Length: 64
Image (cartoon, rainbow, N blue to C red; front, side, top):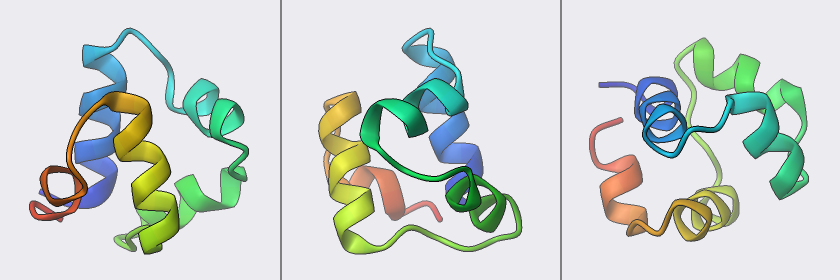
């Protein structure tokens, strides 16, 4: 599973849209486009997302 799928699955589980999470965390929509194209987040961004969803960074990126 790529990072985008992991991220969007977490969004669905928490009842949030990807756009809302990006906005809440102060991330640009360009991140979403990069992830959709198969890229992954930087470590700092992964840490923000993991904290937001209450998961470990490893859980967030190990499937990517």
